[in-house]
Image 1 (tube, helix red, strand yellow):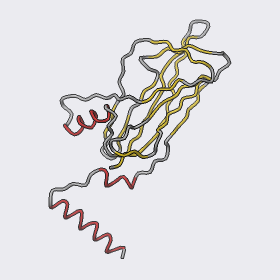
Image 2 (cartoon, helix red, strand yellow):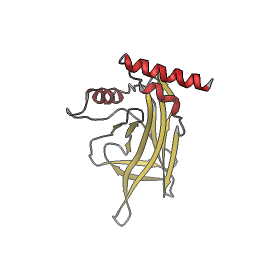
Image 3 (tube, one colour):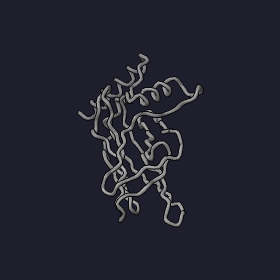
Image 4 (cartoon, one colour):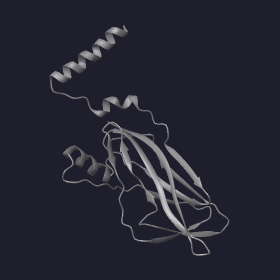
Length: 186
């Protein structure tokens, strides 16, 4: 029976190839297993969390990914300095081997974190491409940037990047990382 099944799969692939049909990345999603829908990293007095609200979305769903940064130190509050946001959401789609970087403006902003009250921000889209990139990649980046994720297996390698100033005026830099994954199906 196993030989017949294998022969059947090979036959379908050969038939698709002969007809000019190439298997889509969706065909391979059964090989991918979501293992980390949420992740947490702690460094000194800060805890960074990266979360996807669902392990599997359907194309057209709003993909809800967010980051949190919580101050857990001895003070009632602390000021952190960062770019337009302390949160970055670079994305990698495994079946296509596509990376979507997370760019943002880099003014120096200061945010006050109150002990025990996480700062939370949802992924809101980002990504870039050049005229030299192929059309499929450009369309993919445009879709992801609009939170219209095409089918696939995604990894978000998020991080929080900021610094604090100590009482003596020196700066302590923080870069807290976490990795989550999720699928988008038809």
